[in-house]
Amino acid sequence: AGSCSLHLWLSPGATSSAPHCDESHNVLTVLRGLKTVVLLPPSSGADLGALPAWSASPHHCQCSSEDAARHPHAVTVTIDVGDALLIPAGWYHAVSSPAGTVAVNCWWPPALMCRSQQALAMKAFRKNQ
Image (cartoon, rainbow, N blue to C red; front, side, top):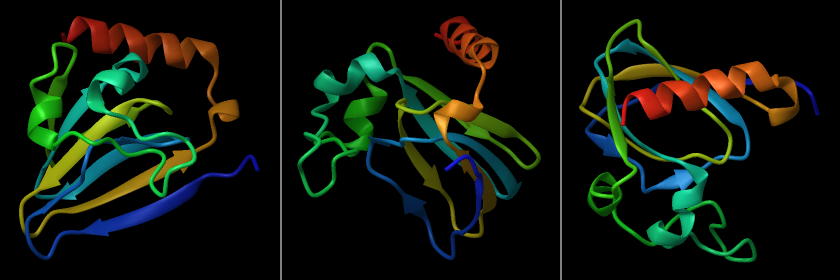
């Protein structure tokens, strides 16, 4: 229950994800290409049309990535080669990548993140708004 999982993401063509949140914390690092991430705090769920917990896709939203990017609390970040982005558990995000992008991410359960790290993540988000 307290372990991390590492994933490799390859984009043979342009890719994008619908707005969603994850139950685990996530550090996303680009190895080649770039990724554009729209981030929104957990309090944005109702505005994004977050699907209920009993739905087939409980962590996804009914809005488009474009609508999410226009939300007043949205922050758009571009991650270049060598950059890393912390996406705290419960934060909504939509990710897009051009063809040829290679990235890795590590997910780990919230219990493994101390409160000072969460406070730093919140401070960085507020600073970029």
